[in-house]
Length: 371
Image (tube, rainbow, N blue to C red; front, top):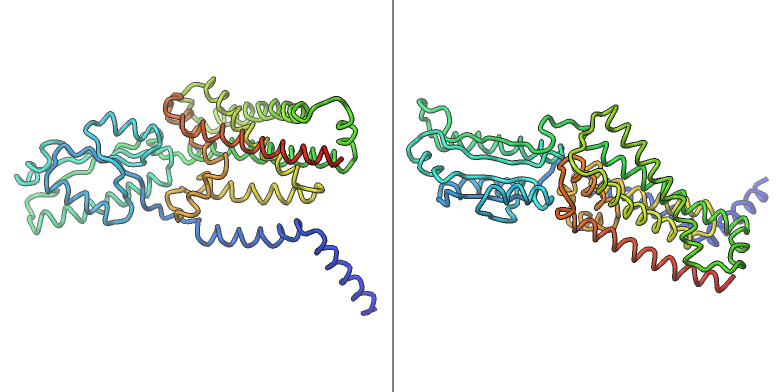
């Protein structure tokens, strides 16, 4: 018995060694999961990009700002001279928080009158917004105590007025459902495309297509276009459920939303085709797709704010199309912004399409020449 079992085990290990891609995925996925869950996933959202409109320009306003910065939750990335530019920076997703100090802030502090400071928060990301607001309120409470210095006659040295934008009631569905649209499209477009092309390789039907006068680009377009139609159907169905069941607001242009989603669908399909050119069988296609989908979900900002991630994992999230699509879908549906605020994520998705499809064509052309 042991002799036969030993021979079988030896055969299995040889088979694993020959299928190096599957073996690498089996080892790589647990390591990546451990690294991401251990380092990147953090619900304590610090270093929120912040813009300041300080019309007081006084020592008192700088002192309060220093308290916000010293907490580690707010990183001042820009100063501006108008509230409109604060709103514009939040619309462009360049910052998450804005502080406004009125011209008479220092005068009211010196006169021991109740000064006012406004805090504007991008609440389309409800987790980051809740963290920013609770931290700012705590800092304001401590700073008030420091200013009053046992003056029992005055209740507050200054008041912090908070204006949450886009999702003032902090409805979690408003944050999650638009992201789920992207997750559904990613899983479907990447996995199904990869598996369908690899299946043709295994069944030998791909070789039959290759002997026809059809060119490589025509073959790829023939594979892509049906899934674009399926992607539109899925998107429309999921969007209707989001509106009718979860009451998701549609603040922007649906036409723009569908146009920009087309670029995201093409980017996801290009990734699926790239996987299909690398995989030798359906099992490898599934494993490689899962290998890509998992970090996409965790690092794109779908579940956890990217601002809470270490710099390495933050920039690693830029390697996935979903990261930029989330900015687009939340920008159009929740903020109602136009294309002029979405140039950066749109160009990034274009770059994904060009690069991924270009690499796929090169690899697939080599496969055609070998066939």
